[in-house]
Amino acid sequence: MSTELFAICFNATRPADLARFWSGVLGWKPVDAPDGDFAIAPPGAGGYRVRFLPSREPRTGRNRAHFDLTSASPEDQRQTVARALELGGSHLDVGQLPEEGHVVLADPDGNEFCVIEAGNKFLADTGTVGALACDGTQAVGYFWSAALGWPLVWDQDEETAIQSPDGGTKITWGGPPVAPKTGPNRLYLELAVTADADADWEAELDRLVSLGATRAATAEEHGDRVLLFDPDGNEFSVRRHA
Image (cartoon, rainbow, N blue to C red; front, side):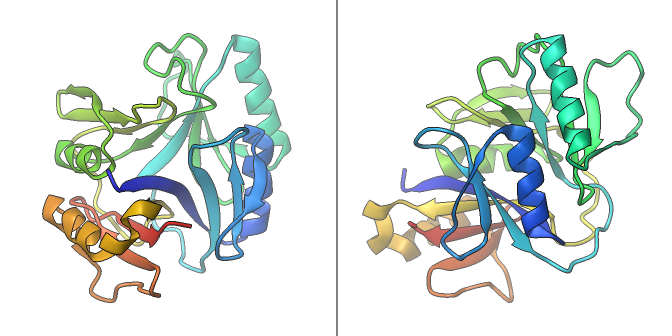
């Protein structure tokens, strides 16, 4: 496979502030970003980073994707929630029931995320960010499985999930109904073509299109990056290896 997940990107009104928030919540450290933007990454080698990019696009409705954070114990969950609130997060009511064990919060830019209760078997051994939970169809789960070369680890009742063969964060899609898209997504995936495949840059873009992606009519192309849409109309970008 010649494409890898490089980053999960946030379009942010205040990128530096949002980077500090998520660095504090996750315990991830700032790293140099290829475009001079703000980025954080987990300790150790490998894995994806989280990038925070400047955007003046107004928020339009609930995000199609959010983080599910894991908890090692009830006390760990309480500490994560307390830390998020201290750093500028807030509680959020999305219709969750009092008896549900997870806590729904919003970051300082209004992006939803959940702190999942301890003992969740589906997210066992995934790391601090257990899942990027997405609103999406079964077809888009199949697309991303093929695009990244990540196997399906859940495929039932039109709900899908994929995970890297190396483990770590899962990406999940909840199946229909999928809410209409009302503007650019504030969270999106950024892929990188691996170094040994740089000579086949166009071939890799063609492969993604053959799987169901489409190029944007006004594609963001700067020689090393192009903007595409997945089968559900979600933006994602592909860059040459950084």
